[in-house]
Image (cartoon, rainbow, N blue to C red):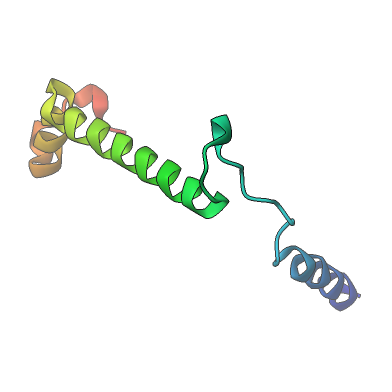
Length: 82
């Protein structure tokens, strides 16, 4: 009997493999660019923002502590270990 339920599960997963049909977002403020171009620039801006945040985090006091713990586990404070 488990074989029938497994087959039903695989049919459901196979239908979901293609994913729901979603349209790409339109450019805001009626900018004259295609959906692909808008999605590219949006992704580029988000990626740059995350990169800048990460660099600033690593240069901060917390980031230096992260690197010290990564380099030397003995420097790990007792309250931070699990």
